[in-house]
Structures are given as structure tokens and as C-alpha cells.
Length: 151
Image (cartoon, rainbow, N blue to C red):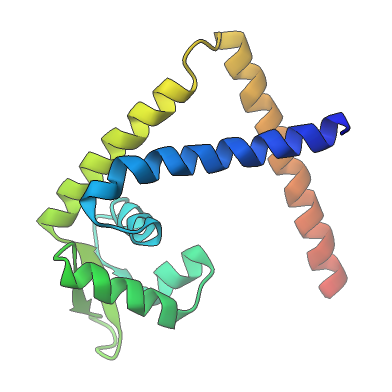
């Protein structure tokens, strides 16, 4: 296995282990990962967000978001509000219960993230950050090249 292959394998395995650690932590809260992602997205807004905006954010269909929204609403974590501009559409906001849950899961994430980086020096963290920034720049360039070919 060459170094690039090993780096990719470690990257994927670390990501999977991070997800597993979080999933174990939130298992008792009776929420699925995709539901949690929607809740965390909503927690960044002070006003309701449309279902369409949520679907676009995650790159999934409005129908898929509708299923997630229905489950979260049944659990009392979000509420649907008719859009002020067009009553045919719903906007979504967190309930008090939803806000409390996002605070709890944020604490879980913070603890997992802190523990994941234990023992790394400032220099190692700086190198880690620089490597990821470079990888993201490379991936963005690949995307832009593909977009240019499609035009």
C-alpha cells in the first residue's frame, strides 16, 4: 500500500470511528444521525428555515426532508410554521425541547472532539489543519474543473 492509499484509508477509518463514537453517545436520545444533522442546522438560525433550504443544504430531495421533519415534529423537537410569503410552504424552527437536545449533543461532540485530539501538540494540530485545508482546496479545484467541462 502506498502512502496516499494509507492516508485515505486512515482518513476514512477515523471519520467512521468519529461517527460511531457520536452515535454511541446519542443512542439514548432516540434520534437518528440525519435527524440530528437537521436539528444542528436549525440551531444556527434565529428564524425559521424553509424545508427547501434544508433539502438544498444537505443535497437531498424535499421528500426526504419531509420524512425527517415529520419524525422530528412527532418527537416535539421542531415545529412547522407556514411561510409568511407563501402559505403553501412550511418553515421549520426548533422547539424548546429541540434547543435543549442540540445543547446536549453539542456537549457530546465537544467532548468527543477534545478527546480525539488529546496528546497532539500545537505543531501537530497546525500541520493537521494545514493538510486538511490543502486537501479541501485540491477537491474544490477538481469540482471546478468538472463544472467547467459540464458547461
